[in-house]
Length: 154
Image (cartoon, rainbow, N blue to C red; front, side, top):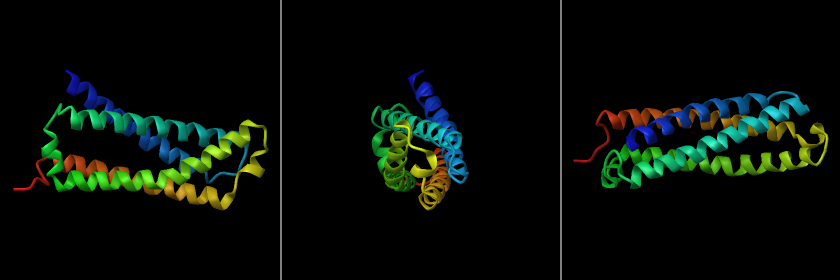
């Protein structure tokens, strides 16, 4: 039963995460208003929650060996590629999250959105968001391929 719950939560995180990172990217391309930044911050929060859920359930599934042994995963080149893509997403997200955190605090202090919001930086984070969404989809393709027996050595 635990493996079903963990797998389900892992997939729910996919839906929340993919939708929210795309929503964040789209909202960042809008003109800066309190409402548009509110949408950006809400989507960013959901993206963070999804990431925490993904990573925690993924680690539990991996090291708790609820599906397969850890050695199965670590000997699968598709799994290692999937983890490499996760590292790329996290690397992109470090800058994006810290920038949006500064914006969130500034707006919370009452600063006007147009003084907080940098259009060029917003476009860069929007692009990063859409690249991250693409990487997440590639991770899903790798996971589905693994589930079908691809990537195992030997």
